[in-house]
Amino acid sequence: MLSSHSRIAFPPRDQLERLIGEAGLAADTWLGDWTGAAWTPESRDFIPLGRLA
Image (cartoon, rainbow, N blue to C red; front, side, top):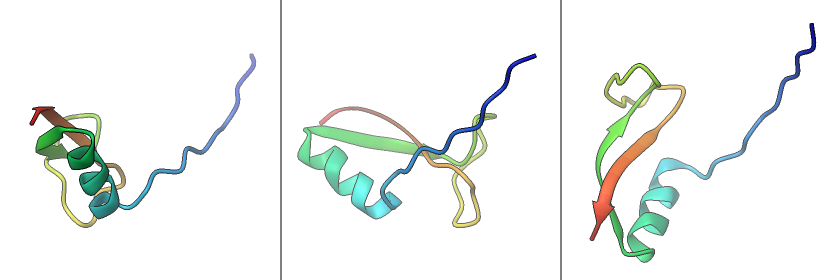
C-alpha cells in the first residue's frame, strides 16, 4: 500500500479574513474542523463558509 504525508501552509485566520474581504467575498461562518464543529481558538483547522460580498 502506498501512502504519503503532506503539509499545506495557510496564513493566520485574521490575514485570511482580510484577503477574503479584499477579494470581494465575505466569510459568514468559520468551522473548526471537517465534521462541521464551530471554530474556536483551539481548533486545528479553519474552514470559511461564505458568499460574494
